[in-house]
Length: 137
Image 1: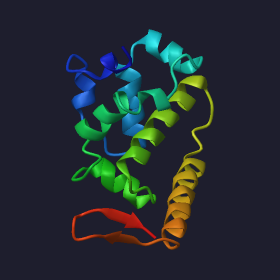
Image 2 (image 1 turned 180 degrees about the vertical axis):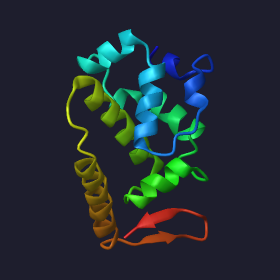
Image 3 (image 1 turned 60 degrees about the vertical axis):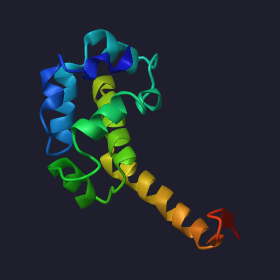
């Protein structure tokens, strides 16, 4: 149901956006009013869209590589496609709720997340046995 607004019949999803503003314009045009209302009042959460609409955006908008949109996100310090699609969806919900998008705060959230992950990785080592088994020490 949620991803029905991002299928072939919605021609705007096939337009490749260059930045977040372009994404929001496309979503505003393509998402049906009933879905917008459900997003607005919290009946649908952006995290519930990660594997549906989020995946479609990551693939159609080439967030895995070779797109102006991916380059735009990288220019603001966002490197992972999952983070990119989450920012797009969270920003859209903020827009339809009349709330500030707070892009800088969203970027900082993901940068801090990856910083914590990298810190944790410093404290363990992955070893591979001859049989191909993985051991974390």
